[in-house]
Image (cartoon, rainbow over all chains, first blue to last red; front, side, top):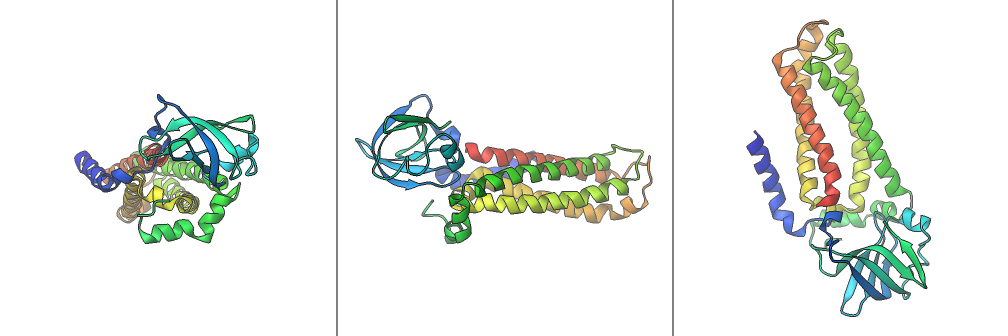
Length: 115
Length: 163
């Protein structure tokens, strides 16, 4: 029975493992990075706001926080508006290329903690 | 969004409903909190129902516990499905391709089938078993199975965020 269940789980998991959803576990907290540059796009949406940032080497997708937390911490949509210069400190994804989740962001000299 | 996901998932994620859930400050949060509250109702009713099937509360006629608990559990399940669908729609392409979510869906199907089976198999025994009388062994087996399936389902639900 247990074996059957395990096989079932494995069978379901294998075909899609390569495009798996990126949970908080799949970020490399041991190697934090800072991405700095202009904000190119903004999705002020739940469950997490997203910006893309034109960094020195490439364009990064930076995962921020739920919009309610962003508002509460002083980061409304205007704060992360397209065109602003941002410095995002956080952890690169181990699954998706050029994606990171931000621990904190600094814009116009103001730092907002996102965790 | 995953652009190589099945069309139906892309359509769901791009629907007006899903967009509204993402755009609103309260929509996703409310569904998320509602999902947990529905889970409390669901799993507490399931636990009472299954405990009676397994042999707890022996002083009660089993039908007097199992049937009302089952109705409450059904209400909880409906609320879970509604709030769950809302959470799913907002990120349909990513969530649907998450292996843990797929295992969770399979467990939900197994849990519902198990509940339907128990409803059929145990109807007569529930009608005729008085207090202080053990139910047939099948009742204990189905009760234990139900608890295992639903606890595993809840664990998978939380684990979606980590895989």
